[in-house]
Length: 110
Image (cartoon, rainbow, N blue to C red; front, side):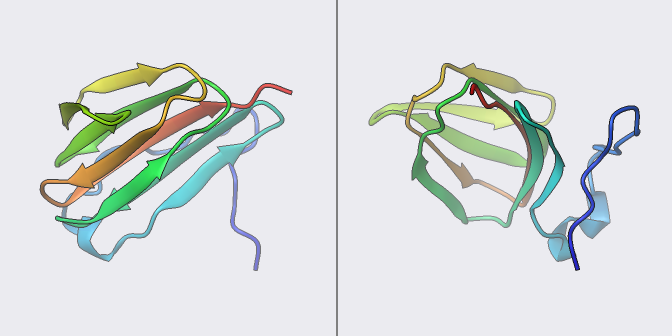
């Protein structure tokens, strides 16, 4: 069964998952020709390994806290409500300091 992606004009709930966080999985919320938005769920201690995407991105911490590493050595802590922006091609990684979910938006240039 195909996963549901939001359609233009559809409301998407991105509020914190709260008690449902532990049993939730990461999911793409919408995908269009130039835009992708997904929620990444990270249990405490889990890492989203070093990677880069060609387009600009934002990462917003919805709940919990994560260490967000840019390149080899710059680490910034994201807590609920914090958002970070990166240019395309910048290597980055995340590590959950506690159970967390983050909202990632990627611009896909064509």
